[in-house]
Amino acid sequence: MTADVVPVPSSLLQRLATVGVDVERVLRHANVARSRFESPRAHLTTREFFAFWRAIEETSGIRDVGLRLGGEISPHQYNVAFVAALHSPNLAEALEKIARYKRIVCPEDVAIDIARGEARVRFVWLLAEGPAPTSLVDGTFSGVIELARRATGKAIKPKRIELRRKRADEAMLVRHFGCEVRFSARDDVLVLHESSLAEPFMTHNAELLAVLVQGLEAALGMGATVRSIADDVRSVLGRRISGERPNVDKVAKDLGMSARTLQRRLEEAGTNYQSLLDDVRRQAARRLLASTAFDVGEVAFLLGFEELNSFTRAFRAWEGTTPARWRASATSLAASSHSRALRTPQARRNAMSR
Image (tube, rainbow, N blue to C red; front, side, top):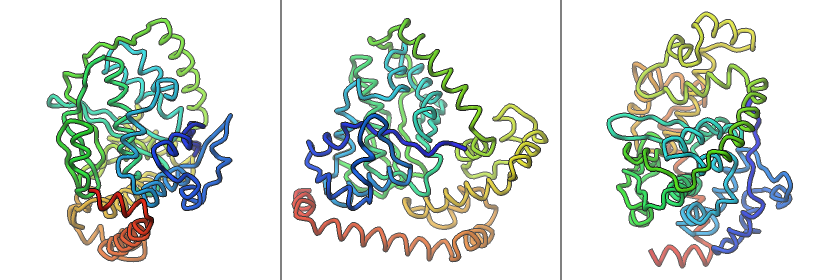
């Protein structure tokens, strides 16, 4: 199974305090102990990591905290995948290094799709039960753009940003990224101009990169011995679900094996293709209903259901209620949390200043 370990920089709490975040309040709100951030092995689970970022959003009222942290990070604070990216020859190979080695760092996949003059970059948390917190998404995208700008020495700008959240803070995001921002999207996507991929890196160091890659490949090989076939199938399904029902033949092809071999290996692992598909669909349904404006019929289509009734029956089996009622409950809970967050003096001042 994929290890549920998300490393966090030991300096993160200090950096948050520097931008005005009440760190102790955040830790209490997230129910995460300060000791989890202490060296030498500072780490959280995915659930704790998401709860921590949501607590920042709900208690600080600092709307650009993710952008600031992502844009201000120093090269020595990059994880090993980003270090390899920094020393790559160009942006294309830098993204390839991030995509290949990010899984070694934490349970997160990076999907890069290039077509029609665009490079679409998505960060997929493999063990998440819901959508990534908005500030975490902002910080991740900001960190990638900051790396590209530092490495090329140029003011690299995305072609656009696509966000799951409803329209909010548009002017702030446009100002920071310098591009169009689309809301209520199916996924959080950083869209780059394909032409940007050829930009050479001034930080390219072939000798250091060779050493880094050797170690990363060794770590990747070790990880492969403990990673399950079910993890791989979930990862492929998460990337493939987009208006069609991914069949076992396509998934098997992506994994470099026959459908029969895939089904046999899943059976040996104590699971089957349909169970994994249901699991991925369930998580995707919760995310889409909670964080996008798509109506229930559109969500059903995106998950590959042939008709709305089929989706409704499946969702009721998963959650014990209909998609519409689940969304209403999730929306009410989110509104209640936001209302409580705005009761803090700092949050009220920030809200009035916008």
